[in-house]
Length: 512
Length: 99
Image (cartoon, rainbow over all chains, first blue to last red; front, top):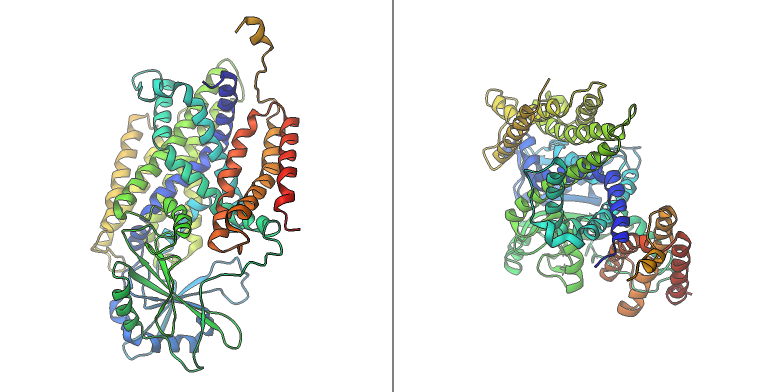
């Protein structure tokens, strides 16, 4: 039995860390849940591919030579896309920073192919940036500043989140069995939300513990590595290891033919489905080359958000290392990869994708209900107070931030099809739109009127979400817009579903 | 337990939360790095920082530090938190520091 003074201590800890991190976590979980379908959203938002211009795989070497001659910077690191798609709309892709830009400036995506007369066509940034932006909102808990500056904030939020989980479990333990299955929906406001909060918290506890611990590492790993570097690894004489690299056999040697490489790989690793070939080159007189093949194997967990990697010799096609290859890893390596996989939900195919979507949305609900409970407790304390009321401010902030985030994300997805063409690849246009909608919602919530703004905000969420399927319908009669005849219709259906739920909830409340 | 006894019994509060939490953040982090060093010495031996073992050691910071952060509230006082965590650091660091 846990002493009740300890339970009391952790109840206070839980409510404070919860209230400090809850709104950031709501944003992280809502955007994170949607990013389970980042590939679908990305394709939905990207104009269709001009298939007649895709270079045949057999001519990849000519394409590589032609690109490197015109853009020497590409040689350091480029991709050969095996199955070009709207989000990777060409055979060859690389990233370069604009000359003079500093290291933190976002890189520009370049795509290259041969035209009908074998002339080189290079274009910048054809794929939509919406998918990446949702991912950034997730990673940076909604704070769209420089990545390096945002990460410590995410780290602190994640640590508070871990603390909230542990303290929440301690509070609940003494009455766990008694309270868990009691879902007193008909009872008082507080009882109902507390039961929902506990039920969601207990049943998704393992999911949340994994998310909290991995998020701490993703956000703070640079600091963790540096602190170990100057202490326990100081003056380490341990042999340096890294992905194996090979120098070119001679100065005019070409890469191993890609069509042959794929045939070899189909024999040596039949379950591994290659998608992208990433070539890298070191510096110096005789630079070392690396070739990573990124691909999927649905039967195993992968070490990167959506891919596993196998390291090949770029000149002979032989397999050099399978450290990051799904299903071919050593025990410890597979363990470390599983930390990534458990966060990204990249195992078990689309079933896991859906489960993570639901768990992620349930997580957002957990933080929202937590805030409501805090507000309700404070409202009771402040009942007879006049003037400034912390519960009212927090209530307004909670609905403004969470519903503003939902409306903002829906708007930027819809904007991918609704923006004028010359804005569609402009990152700042999407960031500005997100913030405009987000802060407008917070502004509405904070308006100095007595009426509850949640009704009108839910209607705004419903409206912005309905713009997503609407933009697809409008695209039917507009020849500059597009619809893909594939699974991306899922994005429209999901958005319509969300819009109906928001509209239903919104009209239940008094709107004006 | 008699009423007399329970009155004298120590009751935990959050009065010194800042002292306890700051000890867990600062000294707790140092202690965590020391524990990963101990783990390296006992399990892996010297390894390259970005090797698989090195990655595992980096990952193990998160659960250990979170454990310290969440248990710091059951130190009886802020002073005790700083004293105990200092003692724990002094006990481990001499063994893991690469002299």
